Length: 545
Image 1 (cartoon, rainbow, N blue to C red):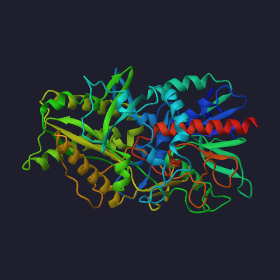
Image 2: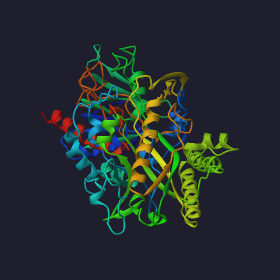
Image 3: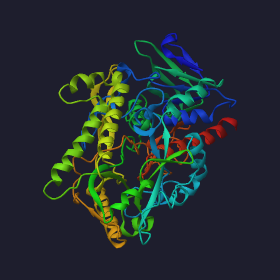
Image 4: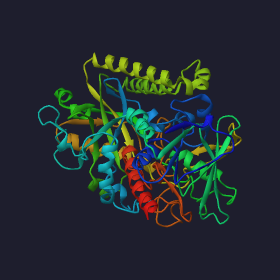
């Protein structure tokens, strides 16, 4: 059942067994695991089925670190959450996102990466990853190039040794979480979802050892409470720590923050368009289909180049991958700067259009952004189709490089509360995204290694434009907000334990990317779903014991 909280009476108390705060990818995946269980589930979503200005404006905040997107554009306050921000064209009028699991090395404690190490190895998550594939309605749980390439039509690049590997992504349509699971949850007799329900405070007993209820506000002056046996926060890497910090009536520093860790270790995936791959033989453009979006056995997939785990360990690098994008532009020394600047401007304009932030009248569109979001995305898609059609009409000469990398966990990179207030009088969020020269070094050194192997195999060479040093201003994120309530068995090192329970609060759990101790270089969605399924199993055990 789905109820609009605008229809509820004022100051009532809703009693349930399990309460999930947030109906994004994590919350929906978790709720789906509870369908038809012998206990009641309540899901609280701050928005409706589509974005509206009043609710979305609650996501506004201040960014004071490395240049970042306007915070209200990086997440969607409505049913489906972050899936509304997926923009990858999948064909057949579908939009989605790339998925893959984290790698084995991502879970390890690496002596060259401070604060690295998960409470369990990747093998522990494999069965949950396999179930997550089903939840996301994608292909089988395999990401080896062997299982997706066609040696005749879509072969991988033939490197001569194993320093460089081809890594695969599968793609999920956003309709899965926006519409498909909405219908399933609506038909579930034991699950009730309340829309326009904005949680403003977590109330605990005097010893802050157990959550007693949530105070929920509805647009306007209405409010209500929810009491439950178990509470799960599934609000993403920015709003989850914000809610914990706002809940400071019993503990002045906020819940779960006895060691000043809530909101710290904010991570993104550094994205950067930089450099070119020059094939030695133009025929390469006809044999790199594996690295472009295509369909194999009804699954949309694409490949990317990555470093082997042995190289990551021997070179002491962060995890990294790079996508290859065919381009007709040849960046000779005389035109390289202008060509690079032009392409960067194309992507900046596309991002701006998506945000509703178009030059000359940006102030007006940014004000209307939540209402115009679908229109903005439509403009973005139309622009990119026209741009790629233009590229496709010309002869390819090079590949443009699109890098996505891991970043070092950094306690100074954080989410906190600002002095500004939202419409309910609550402090807005402040993001201080901090990057380091080490993050840039990985992108530079990875290109050097790829260049060495391309030359060694007679496949061409790279032109490397980026230099080691401070992060360049054009380095941006992927709307992947991770790490702010990190998982660790020791409460002095993490906000939640290995079961995603907030340390010292027996019935408060967290689901979503804020749990990640390290980020790897894979899009976080598949791991978010796998962890939600794992938490679902744990909660079912608690409820049935």
